[in-house]
Length: 231
Picture 1: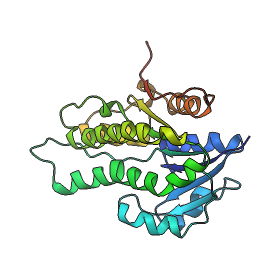
Picture 2: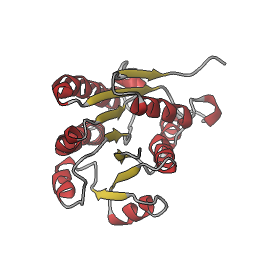
Picture 3: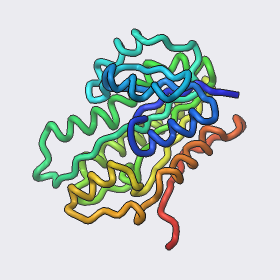
Picture 4: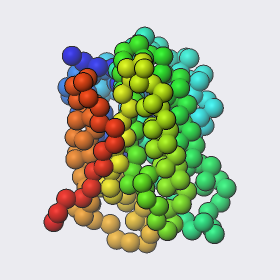
């Protein structure tokens, strides 16, 4: 049976491949797009899809964007797959870098979830956060990004306890380094050569996400780490 799924980050990497897989199997997608042009790009090849036009870098704009969207009464899942990264030593990171990463990676998912929760409750649905290994361990130069992802874990853990009485499942997936455009950006920031074959492939993470979404209602995957396999 097709599901209605709100998805962020559908324009690149894990989110893009997840959108393709969900479309192929007939789910109805509501994609968060930063502007009208991007909304057209994301929905044109996905029959039945629609968009919420909002910039996740400005979480305060989400309420008006959701109110202006024609959304169904029930939403089966929200999948938060969008994210940004800006590496740097604590001694060098600017306030803007901290604010940008916290806004996109933590505050926007919290606000979008808040706005859509009544519809998710109506469907006894699920909220799934695509986090990161950095949401569990922070390494040098990853302070701001890891802080945003540690916060995302806290958001998921609190939400899980709060929404259980409404039948809402909450899942966090923690991918290790994955071969996405963000990973290429990270390698550039680290001044390292990048070879996509060295890292987890996005399809593996998408399979993990779909497993969590498709799990029968008698169970929930609360936390799922996806790490590189043996080579």
